[in-house]
Every structure is written in structure tokens, then in C-alpha cells.
Image (tube, rainbow, N blue to C red; front, side, top):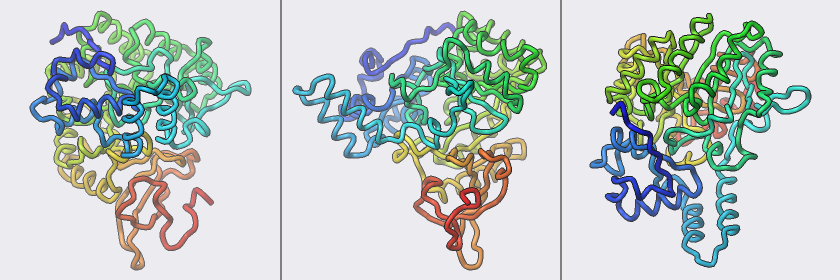
Length: 430
């Protein structure tokens, strides 16, 4: 397995994947229709090692990587299906239908385009989001892909070829000038796509400048990546694996902290020997691995699985970090659960683990004001309420200040909640 060559399967060549032939016609149709709207890619490692093809369509990793009919609502699905089957449709007609549906899927939630992009010398900084005071997100232009795509991914607009919807750094590396000037920044998170699709030389181009003295204010460098479970060969047997590990070590030896933010959605991603070997190799560089994932219907809506996964992550030396709520974009209706149910799953899982795994924060919604966390439910003066806080906020003064929302058994996202006790606005809206 360690010598596996990466093979990528998309809608154009999916018939070359041996397991594809055993799918039912309805599953093939759904893949074809939905993948014209949302990005689809799976690789040979995932297909051969993580998916149980005897458990289709219920296998969680299959649901995580292969499109299902319900990932589009019925009207969008039928519109796309009709467009694909209409021989009279021109390429322009088809593109217009795809564009229309995508724009109705809330491609950039929580003010990512309108509120998160900073300016430098009176111009937007390409490939940077700066929502929270201490942390900036950087989207390397060469890291705009992933080894496989997750069906739920809220960054799906990065992968569809629409430049107006994509975050990416420019050739002038303007982001470095911005980071240098803003000394309030202590953390830089490289994200994408997936920065680990870059070769070691490109990755070095982004990380090493931050080790120079003019960036002493930046103490923590993070890499957000799915590669640990989708392509662990990146840290074991790729031709430049050792160069990547050496780069990680140089960052840590410089006195800065390198944190690998691993996206792990299900314990089935953690079962292979090479996955565990990759963890060992990364940790040997002094890099800290933190794990995060959203709660997803059809994939991981099971408190026992979360508890088991967090225990195993701690055993392997990783730190459970975030328990997210599926964001209000793309195929949200397929994956979302009511907030009340989400809280119960989180609470029940947390009760089954020791303190070392209770580092995981959530359930967290990355909404416009910040990361809104559900702290629990209660009855106050006869009214049932959600107790909420902000784990992160655009205004740091709002962090960890409790506030109350009226209980709603059907609400799946923060925007569906209203203040408790007849208040017209939440405190941060006033």
C-alpha cells in the first residue's frame, strides 16, 4: 500500500473505477446529475481502503465522497436532469442552468466575500480572510484542490472553476505584506482546498517566509488538511514525503508552533496502518495534530461513533478540537440535523470520554457574528431556551458572553433562531 500511485476519479473517468460498475443505475444517475453542480473527486486509496462496497449506499465514506440524489432538492435535481437529457440544449444553456442552481445554494455563507476579506493599500488582499483579530486564513493559489472531495464541503465554490467565487493568493504574494503589517496576528491558517496537494517546494514557499524576524508576531502556523485520512502516503511514501516532514520540523525548530488541523469525519478513516504511520511521522517533527469535523446526517450522526473516534484520536496522540454544525450552504438539507438533536449527540458522546478528549469544542456554528456554540438547553421563567456563547467573534468583547435563544425543535442553523423572552435582537446585534 505504501507504494500506491495516486489515481484521481472524476465525472469524466469514473467508469474506470472498478467498483463503479457494481452501482445501481439510480446511483449512477444521481452521481452524474449532482456532480454537474457540486464538485466530485475520489481517489484510489479512498475507494480501495476506506469504502465498504458491500454496504452501499449506507457506507459512511461512500456517503462522504459519492453524490446522492438528496444532495440537491427535488426542483434543482429535476431541472439539472432535464437539462442533461435535452438534446436541444446548447453548452451555453447547460452552463446557465448550472450557474443558476449554484447561485441558489448560498455559495459563500457568513459574509465570506462581503465581510471577511481585508484590504491592503486600499485594495482587497487576494487569498486572505481575516475575520478574527488574532487569526488570518490564507488560501494558496497552488492548493485549490483536494486528494478527494467531501460531499458536504462548505468550500465547494473553490473547486468549480468560477474565479469570482474562489479565494486564492496572487503571484505578488500580497498576503505576506498584509501579515507583516498586522502585528495583532498571532496565527496563520493555510487552507484551501488542501495545502497538502502542493509539493514540498511550493509548501516551503508559503511557510518559510513566516520564519523570518519580521514575522515574529506570528507564533502559530496551522495547516487545514484532509490528507491524513484521504492520502496518508503524503507523509509516508510520496517522493517528497521526507522533504515535507523536514519542513514541518524546521517550522517547529524555529520556535513557532506548527499545528496540523486534521479533518476526520468518521472512525473508519482511521483504520489503515498507513494512516497511523502518517500520524507517527508528523508527530515526530514536533507538530501537533488537532482534529475537527461537522456532524453529518447519513455519515456520523451517532454519539457512540464520536466517542469511540475521540478516544482513538487521543490514543494516537491527536487532540480533538472542534465539533461543527453543517454550514448553511450547498447540500445542507441532506446533511443537517436539528440543533436540539445535535446538542444531544455531542453531550452523549462527551459523557463517554475522559477529560483528555473533552478538549473538543462545540457544537459550533460558523455564522456571521462568529463561532456560535450551543452550551445547552434550559427552562427559564417557564420558557425553554438554547443557551449559547461565541467561541470566536468579530468583536473580541463578545467572546464567551452567554445569551439565550428561544427553543425551536426544527431549527438547524443560527439564522433560524430568535432571541428569548420577546427580545427583538441578540446582544451583539444591538
